[in-house]
Image (cartoon, rainbow, N blue to C red; front, side, top):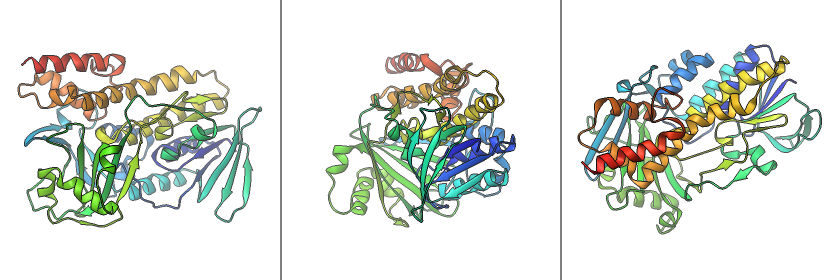
Length: 406
């Protein structure tokens, strides 16, 4: 075996397809059976460009997912809309809002069609990277264990974070611990009551760090979630579903939009989700997507980071397996982190209020607005945009000060 990939989500499936097409023996071990539920349904426009590079764009297009052209932010009755077509970066100006069970299954099927082998309901129980060859122990649904000796391992296990746990790579996140409570609903929103081609981010009137997402799908259902501190989540009473509706009720406009909504799956919660690691790569392995770092759901960055990490890793690993010299830190970690740092700056700006002040500023300069729109559309690796990369936080805060000064 050339490459063992842990997890068949977007990062794992894309990396598997890219490497299998280049002739490598690729095996993906996935803990769950597909299709399976996953949170994180609103994609960014940059994801379309990444899917094109991965050769999976047409397969996604055929699934008739909900078309998405931007985002609307709603605070205290004031709204601010961003259309992805109005960005400064080149690339697609649209994307989709997807039921992840169908989206992830589509990418996994494409990986299989490309020649990768995916084995479902297989759990990783141990790893050993100390020797000349990687050793990975797995356990199948029947309880049988197996030892694999691939030339390289890619961890795309998402929130499972298999290698960070087994190798003790966790590092405390700089973000405060937050909680999300979420569900899929049949929204029954009246025609014209909401632009279904946009994700809605609603902000609590009294606490601007509490916000909600509303992600409509093409079949009349929607993903709805509320993000708050863990303490605020625990202050709600009753069953998890009762807590969910209490959280919705605390935002008048969202409560109005979902007045006739009904849940269509059990309510879930995610606690203290922000996570990072000490390193993105090491002897015999590299970490992809959420297995390496998860920031926050506010900008729907998860799938975009997953796809970008898969494309970068597949390219570096291809050259390594061919015997060419590679630099994982410079070619993979540094490149990936350029965009991750951009998202991190905007997440921090969202919660400290600086980005919200920019978003709702009534007299936005058109060229700067297009740059901000590019980041919101996921084009965080565009080095022509001054609001990307290591300087993004400083420049965003400077811009917020200008907005506050009027």
